[in-house]
Each structure stands twice: as C-alpha cells, then as structure tokens.
Image 1 (cartoon, one colour):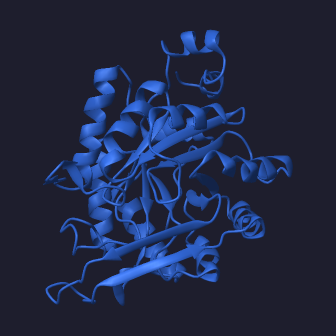
Image 2 (image 1 turned 45 degrees about the horizontal axis):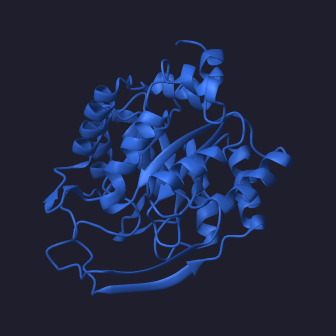
Length: 324
C-alpha cells in the first residue's frame, strides 16, 4: 500500500461486496492525539499540557508511541487555562512541535476555548497548520470547571458555562475560504448526521477537495449518542471519496474508537477528550492513550499509519510544513 490510488480504492462503507473485500486490506490506522483541548487544564490532570514547551513534549511522546497527527488548542501564555487568539502564540507552539517531531501532521483547533471569538478563530489560521478543525454546526454546551488553585499558574474560581457557539453556513464558508488561501485542509467535525447538509453545500460549491476528511464526535453534549448503530448510520452518510476518524468523549472513548478501528476508520484520543484509562484510574499521559490504541489495532490486525502514510490517505502535501 504505497500509492495514492490504492488508498482511494478503499471505500467499502456502503456496498456489501466492496466491504467483504475491504476488510482484508484496510488502510493503516491514523491516530490523532488531542493533547490538551480548550477547556480543562492541569487542575484536572497534571500532565495536560498548557505551555508551548509542554505541548511539544506531550506531542513528542505521543508521536513516538504511534500518533501521526497532533490536534492542538494553543493556550494564552498570559492565562494558561484559556486559549489564545494570537497567531504568534499558535505559531510558536507549531514551531516547537515541528522541531521535536519532524514528520507529524500539525492540526490546530478553530474551536478554541470558552471565550474565543469568531474573529480570533479566523486570525489563528495565520499560524498555518496543515489541518484545522472545522465545526459543521452550532456547539451548545453546559458544564462546570472546578476551581484552579493557586498551586497552578493563573488560578481561577469555579467556572460555569451555559452557552451556544452559533456557527452559521456563512461563517463556515469564511473559515474554509481562509483555509484554502493558506493551504490548510479542513477536518470537518461532525456531531450528528444532519450536519452532512453543510458538507454537501461545501462540496457542491467546490470549496473543499477530496479526499474529504470527517471527524465524528460521539458522546458530546447535543451530539449524536455514542452507540454502535449511530456510528454505523453516520458512516453510511459519508460522501464518496471520504476518510473518517472517530472520537469518543469521556467514558465512551475506548468503545467508540475500538469500533472505528475494526470498521476501517481512523481514531482520535488524548487528554482533551478523556482523562481516564479505565474507571477510577487516570491515564498516565497522552502517550498512554496512543499506546492503548496501538495495542487494540494490533489485536484487530490493523497496521499503524506513519505520518507519511497519513499524508497520502488524507491528500496532504507529502513534505511536512516547516515553521522557521
């Protein structure tokens, strides 16, 4: 499996006969590590990275464990529990990651954190990641973040959020247009099947190019329930020439990613999505999440994708982006 056409042929999601052939030659498994997220911090897990150097170090360990993509929420150096809107901060993180991980695919979030503005989301694309997350619809959530004690930098009282990020067709078009101008591939975050209407619009208007890259977010508030039947149904809705990856939030991480492995998809794990190895036992760090996925994949007979292979599968530039 060493050429573009081979990967493009592996589309066995809808046709029974293609599927029966597909299971004998699934593509290498792309593992994305979501190292930090934009909400929780060290107050919830001591190994959740906040500073740029910490993010680079956690990425390096995960890269060595088998991750070929890193998903990053660059933090604000002046308020480490919040995300930055300054592309210089994000560029610094990307540069440090590239220095330690010469081949990994760098993916920056446009989701940001609790207080990220739409203007800030667009501005952050100037850090020029190779991939960027693209929410395919509104994001409604309600949660409480425990107080951050003064033993950590930038302490805070308990935080409560009950809000909706009102994503529109027009704003998604604006983000995609900017991504295209900067040669960034959108990673379309799909929370339920109805958001395929948005991807259909992008495809119809030729704003995105195949292979289309989808990330299914299973178990997030107001998203689709994280059940086997829902994962299969959402897979059935994929446009032709698509690649998909699956996220399981919290306690649903391992079961949903395991399903994605043996259904031929790819996976995302990491301390952004889940802090626990199993009930009552926290993950050692991000790398331990990758290690668990690698062992699961080997059990199911899936090869682990190198960053080079992941670039071919996703239609990315084969030469890793440099950050000078």
